[in-house]
Image (cartoon, rainbow, N blue to C red; front, side, top):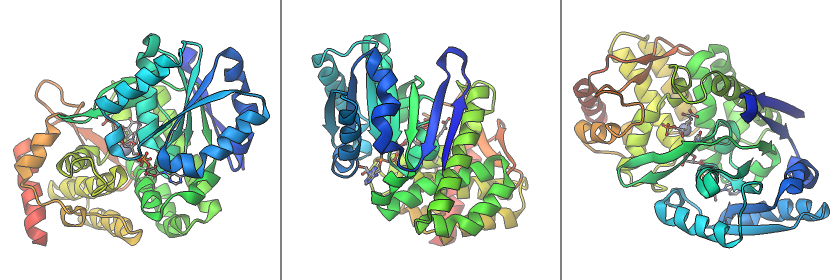
Length: 371
Ligand SMILES: NC(=O)c1ccc[n+]([C@@H]2O[C@H](COP(=O)([O-])OP(=O)(O)OC[C@H]3O[C@@H](n4cnc5c(N)ncnc54)[C@H](O)[C@@H]3O)[C@@H](O)[C@H]2O)c1
Ligand SMILES: O=C(O)C(=O)C[C@@H](O)[C@H](O)[C@H](O)COP(=O)(O)O
Ligand SMILES: [Zn+2]
């Protein structure tokens, strides 16, 4: 299959190509950018071993000279220290605004490289070549770029759209199963937000997708990218209570990631899985959503091996500690934290009347229920 999705953002519009084997055509696909300036590939050590040779060969076949920077893998790379190292190395290479930095990797590389590109020379070009399921269905699209800070997740960043997104689903063949499952949580998110039929599709096809079925994988990528592109085009900077829907599960999830030290104890997608289960359970507790829908969400996440509770996330912190992490959430406005809650599967909405003490009590109940 080959499909192009356009993110319609006026002068910042760009294409997302989804095509099995596209990485091997990257020379031709990236040639227009190479004609405008240089290409510098930034990747991490795992991807350097598994997918970088394909990209390097494809670029070389078109005579494109490339520089490559290889960074350590893992969430810790979204840090001030690595950002400083990366920007220094790109400046040492003489990066210019007309050059493109090519982010070859998962969401960590994409978020870091995009942020570096947004601040270098006050903004140079970048291209996303996502190599995880999570990055292909979510992080490579939409221009949210960031690093983490001591205060929390993604707190230092910028909106900076890529010039092009090259999605080759075959790169996922080398991705470890735990990472595939983590990325799948963001796929399920699109169904839970506003498409109950797609959630039903996930229930029927999720296990095949995780087992590596190419048809299920490609369908999920195309559906997710299409949904995200539409939402981003309509609310690029999350000002209209629309893009915020993409944050379903993230207020809880980011708090769990902070509590587990942004480590591989809990991957981002795993935090989102637990967060979505908690958002539905909290919605049910408030009488907003049928308890059966909350149970169905948790059951599907568990069926594909994702965590769906605090215990399964390995988090034992008191509710007020987790709520303390949430106070840094970027949605916080005038002391109010909007929450993504649900009236049912496919019916997520932004709630602005959530009492954080009640959320803390809910989290304590969840912890005790399973103790
Ligand atoms: N900007 C956004 O809109 C957005 C959306 C969702 C998530 N995110 C961010 O994305 C990050 C998580 O991204 P992720 O889940 O892709 O994690 P990641 O980038 O850490 O990649 C996961 C692991 O897989 C390895 N890997 C990547 N591709 C591989 C491949 N093809 N073969 C073998 N190994 C491979 C990596 O080296 C890493 O060890 C988080 O920081 C999250 O906040 C951002
Ligand atoms: O693109 C968006 O908007 C999202 O919210 C997608 C999320 O999956 C992603 O994790 C994002 O980085 C979270 O955004 P944040 O603003 O809460 O940092
Ligand atoms: Zn996310």
